[in-house]
Amino acid sequence: MSLFNVFNIASSALTAQSQRLNVVASNMANADSATSVNGGPYRAKQVVFQAIPMGTASVTQGAGVVVREVVDDPSPLRKVYDPKHPAADKDGYVSYPNVNVVDEMVNMISASRSYQNNVDVMSTAKSMITKLLALGQ
Amino acid sequence: MVSKLDNLFDSHSEALKLRSYRQQLLASNIANADTPNYKAVDIDFGSELKRMMAGAGGAVQPATTNPRHLAGTNANPFGAQILYRTDVQGNIDGNTVNMDMERAQFAENALRYEAGLHVLNTEIKHILAAIRTQ
Image (tube, rainbow over all chains, first blue to last red; front, side, top):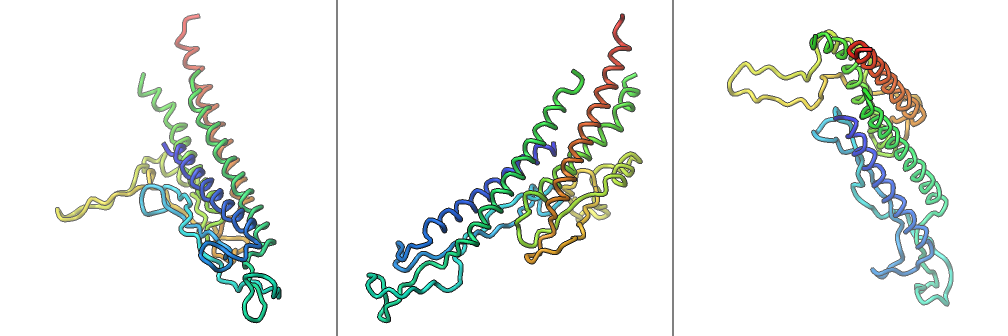
């Protein structure tokens, strides 16, 4: 029954959006992390969304969404002059993460709105199915 | 008698099936509002319903005129023609989902589905009233 597919589609979007929010949280938390596990400064991460057809390889059954990959933001790192810092290079500059906090805030709000939209979609589908089950009573 | 009942319920059930199918397409538009290059889809409900009522419902199957032809599968349950929306304000990432319109269409489709259920319910009640002895 195609109405149940609405749940699959909306839940795939909820998963993807919460993953995006996760990445935003990671970026915001590490906005000033000059070092990370792989030595260099933390690099901002971005999610890449991809539409996945439900069932077969066409859009006829609707399409869910999935996070295809999490990529590192290629933009240059932020340089701050601070010769006393242990991570300073020979010219006295420290590389800080390329996290743009304004971008991340916008991303966060967008993710939260999309999440709400999909929750609404689910509750609408639920009320439709509930009414269908009450048919003839 | 049963066939008369069938005739009575048929038109409503076809419409409900098509409504729930459209709901699925609209849900996928809302889910993919942030997916780059996703193109919003929809069906022309009126013409699809007319086509289904004319008895042309069911998936379109490719003709197999040779024993070596593969029996193609068409996942589209109603053979409905999927249309792409023309975008009003283009998005820089190639996405054509207009969230305001999708939400409005989704709500409208849900309401019309429930209206269809309501009419069907009323008909069932009328028939039950006719069956029951007073």
